[in-house]
Image (cartoon, rainbow, N blue to C red; front, side, top):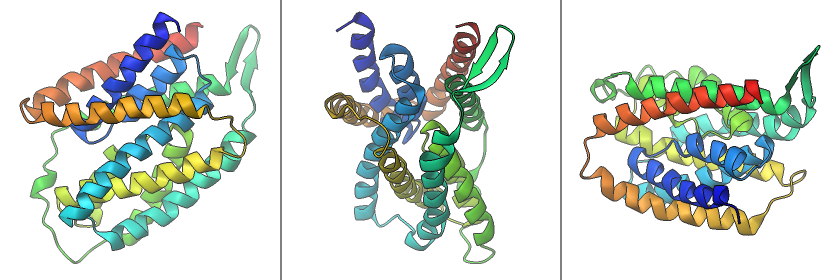
Length: 266
């Protein structure tokens, strides 16, 4: 095992810590770790990411079921279009993309490059959402003006996002549930986890027909990530959340630019 792989397994533990600290964001670390440290193809890397993210979200879902925080009707309305979107993306859109998207002279823009560059854009977007000072806690929890049509459209978009880059999309789901489904922030976070769980399961399952999964490796990585979740949850009790978010957002932006440079110069 190379030193990069040792770093990668430590990264799996860090991925869990991130999930434990913020309740999501695992794919932001997991996908680059799979691609650049374990030398895994981006398509397979996003599939592995969905497994790790989905398993982690499932743990959070089980905890929230006991707390009675999940709004099942809203989750069902959001999940249906998201599941359809992630299934179609992984089963049909991703396999249908040509290996070479653009070829001009000496420049070749491949499908793998496109996915990683799009992923870097998602990282920067996540960093923006993380640092933006929104007052979601102050949004009133009303039982009227629930925009189900918009929730369906956002669900389709989240499913597409999950299918393309293996991200759970919590940074989109939580604000959408607060603003358009009129949930409290705690209800939105809890409900988002069950949505992410089902999205990731369907996305990963859709890949089983055409991807070769190394189960031993994936289980080890996921186990390390889950152990990191408990550490991250413990740390979050003693560190100021705003400080964590600001510093991690800066790290995300740096990572995004590193990915862009690596893809365009390799």
